[in-house]
Image 1: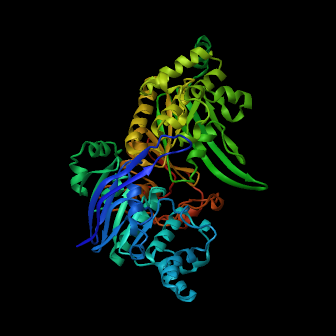
Image 2: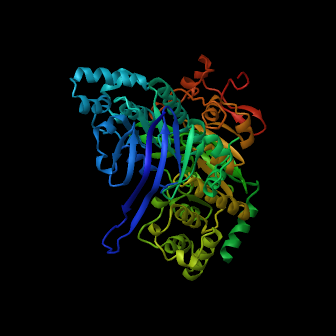
Image 3: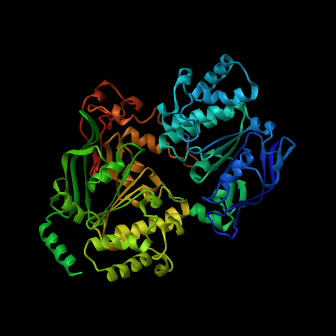
Length: 259
Length: 334
């Protein structure tokens, strides 16, 4: 079942820096269209500057001013309605650097409960109950509610970010390089956590990464981005074993083998 | 450069063993007032001419500190407590500041992790490459010529144009090549690359790694490469040291480590490597902070599935095969 669709998304950034008078534009996304089906994991791969993070932010409703439509559950969201509240609680995002995406002065429990607090305006005791439950869901303890982000390691902070993204019970979770700043052993822990959460909450993921090894084991379908275009799309096995596009071939041949 | 030739032959006479570098029982501590935290413990390894040695481990396990201590570039508060670093028969740990100035860059040079941080934004690339050469007594004109030929060797197109540009005009991969050129400027005997490609994309990463590898082979330099990425290490290194909590827990040829890991941590690390068609396993728990490191017994104790009470006592390396050894007393049982 189709849950989400990107239709002809084009986004241009004004790349004017400083005082120079000549206006330059950078096309971050050029007519990008794809579909997303329920309960699948869609990998997005590309080098830096290929537009994969811009795409993630547009879907999460963090960037406006684009051309084209986002269609979520048959509701249209054009650029003008990108702040739409309905979209906000259905689509959530987890960022790359967990320590940078948590407020250092906020208790982690409050950080997790904040989206609920904004949407439902519940009393604190109720918020706390849900936040503690979510902490346990991501492998932390309910007693961690009163601790601050600096007391946690990178992997634990990423668990907190995942908990915060899950608390509104979204249908679609965007993971923007969720494991690239983590160590190898922690990376595996987070990937396994994400897998468990996917089955437990019946989620759909968009997994943005530059690491093809992670994409290969984690995703069902894959889109390869280059210079703001989708150059190849297909099932992970097909794309990785039989790449058709020149850029994909180059990308896959650059992967360093281990063992 | 006549002075260089003379120096080289002198060294060759003095040098009795084929080893370039020998590190023996190196202990480094972080000293905070009266408290002392061990950072590196009993690091022992050697590097022969033309050998590529890799250090792998997670962040905070001391692999970068090992690299820094070879150049005596440890950050403030860190100190070499005991042990020797023997380079061509001389002990680097006993060098004076003045001796170190002549030593760094000329004998052992380093490529840093983040190229945009390692370069000075207000100087042209050329200025930065010739800076080290000028300090080591090469004339400006000659140094400039050499900078251009170095960039050419590193497969940069139009090197004459690039030397006049500033770092912000170059891409990440180009910047890293410039950093490599700076390191190579004085023709060092050993190149240390500390996470040289972490900030780069996959395609550029492979280009940069190939360049480092080819140049090391061509010039017969010893290479020490530090990375958290097992892919990079297995691509670059002949032998590898796995680090955990400031200790070298396993050493051996890259083939032995990858195909026949002995230490439970190495096994766990390899199992946690995402690879198609393989079930992903993870090591439970997290790397302890350096302030919690103990001096006795195995640091992997809490996370290890094979541990028993005797692991809390001290024990030495177990030799598995020639040159392959691990710091685990249960190697033969698991």
